[in-house]
Image 1: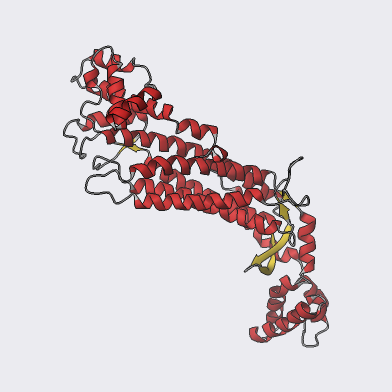
Image 2 (image 1 turned 180 degrees about the horizontal axis):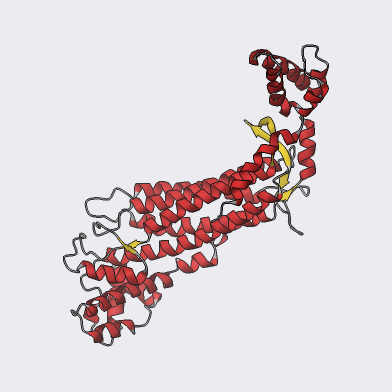
Length: 431
């Protein structure tokens, strides 16, 4: 991933130095497992444990000769042993090392993502309670609908993030697997006890039925969940972008001292973070698509998935980590203009309260259709000719509601009183 969309933690986790260190740990554990089973001498296990880390530059030089990255690594690691180098990679095939190391990397990157998702949840949840009683316009199809609260918007996002967290926990568990099963996964040259030893020490589960490789539906699921988290980020971003439009101006991204919104127009404060995050979500969906393409390999394996995963696994986890951190900061510093929300509600001329009037008229004895047509007629006049819906209804001789009953229909409290149940549910929820 390019530096602009990277985080230090993910960069370190996916670095070549870290990859080679994990490869070495797997190879050393295998020798130790052979020694524990009485096959390899204890001195070989001790020599393997004392080997230095493989130098990336030397590894690349050897790969230029072998044209095989794992074979080059094995040569260098074995050559660095004081004795017993023949036990390095004994009974293994390349995928045993590669897929088990991938399991470690995905587990660790998944842990970072879960922490970042939890941080985002905490911030969104806190701000939901902050604005639980702040009335704002609810919109459907982009058109005024009924009053809601800005806290309810945030609460809805918080529950979606909670579901994302649950899905990601499951997906991370699904890819936290390894295999030490040999050329076509039959354990012919290394018994399953070797696999159990290695996976136990690495904190991984063993693939129950390997075909030399770990099944790629696991990785497709993982990438699909990352894309779904991205969809949540995009959904939040899209809402903020709409609410920041000049004609709405109910929220806006924070704008720092010295910041410039445009190279040409000094007045601009653009929603650059949410636009950026919308683009990130598109990338994550592309990575998920590539993961799905990787599921169908030939027979017990081929390497058509390899080039894809070298790009999409580090890139998808890294850019999502970046996106989660950016969204967390954005929500934490989001500027919420409650006065503008109130003014926008007032600008609807009472049209957003139409359903309350409809139900009051039905309760007074009108049929639903008669009540609907009566409110609609006055609403359209308010739309087209001005005045408020309440004023037009009060002047309509066909409206039988007394002044107090009619006025009660135009109260925000009527629309928000029962919504406290959402915050009771949110209060009982945590990650």
